Length: 160
Image 1 (cartoon, rainbow, N blue to C red):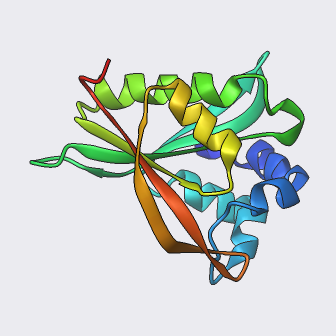
Image 2: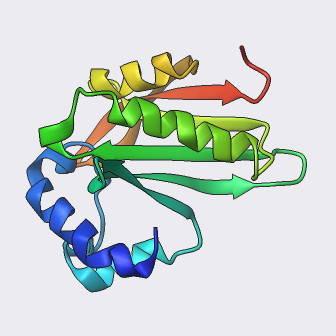
């Protein structure tokens, strides 16, 4: 993802505001996700950000954040796909590509992900990519004003 993607990504986020909003963290500035300037700042925050394409059109986004090298060699992934394109395997394929980058060029040992306990579709994406569910983080993140339970998932570089 590059700053040039900010306008089309903002349009995607606006079109999916309610759909994405169910799983997004509460923020002091929630409107930042729906302005070109806010999205551009997010794209350039230093994390590894990627677009998900469907027949050459922007269909979603994926990220590797919280990368720590040294003794941990770990990162956290996140992903979302346009509601109109959900259920077609785009997120599953994108997570597979994130793992290739994480375990390849980034040299990570572990990749983690979190899913809201009620987000079954996201859990299926992780299961299809060989992640192991580690446990429940009770009232872990604030979503739409409520503390929501999340599952923590991991995948190690040498997992089958």
